[in-house]
Length: 165
Image (cartoon, rainbow, N blue to C red; front, side):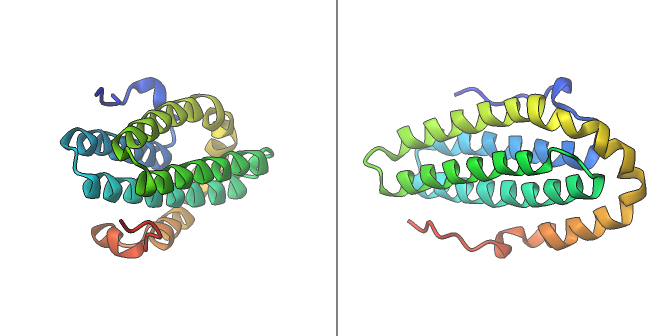
């Protein structure tokens, strides 16, 4: 199964967001590895971590868009909610499915296509708005990262999964 390669065209030029997007790509690649090893508990664990991190990213991004006064923030947030619903449905299918690895592969493919498309099409739209204010928001960014993502060394403890196998 092919890994996602981070390419320069995925960079938005907003370091804090680009870093989070690279982390999501890393989780998708970890999911690929877990599928290849055929260990369902590992696949579920990576799916849960990926979902948790992505939701935290969405919270941060949406708050940043609000700070920037991005006019299409509500539409952007709605795309995030639809994504979350789809991922949770896939996770539920994985736990209850008769062929969990087929579901995991479909989930991985969906995640890969959605992320790349979302960055290039939707996230690219907010770049001018965010770049106008980002330099003035460093204090807020630092406190928001700590509040939303918590202690990076202890991130697994922050999330309680409703999808225990």
